Image (cartoon, rainbow, N blue to C red; front, side, top):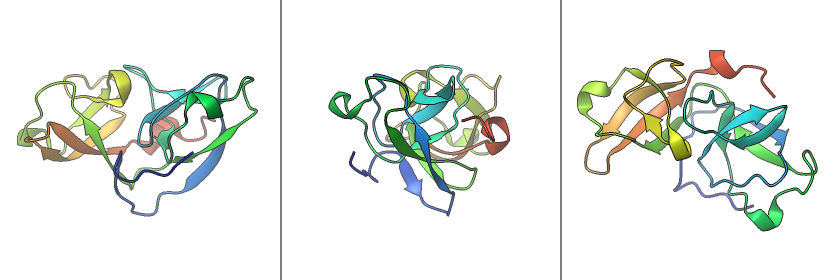
Length: 142
């Protein structure tokens, strides 16, 4: 696994990094939002509550054949800032709002059912948002 700070992590503000077990056949990119599935890490889908953010890319060749055979580093907590693609048109007026996780580790800027992400900055040119995680939702999940 390679650490890729150009993908995902925007500002490291001291959130802890934990080592957690990976679900069989799971893959993701550094910076992807991860959730717990029966105690094992997998990439979040739309509407999922993130446990944390992947520190490194996990490719198929390194993915475990059995759940728990491999562990991965994941940022947890609500301080770090992460850059996510927006699944809609990001606007400056969204700063300070909460939103949900979209498909493929995007920010679903049109949904605030779970309120798992807080938008703190917006890049309208790149159509990305800088977010923090809501740690109250994912505390102690894995």
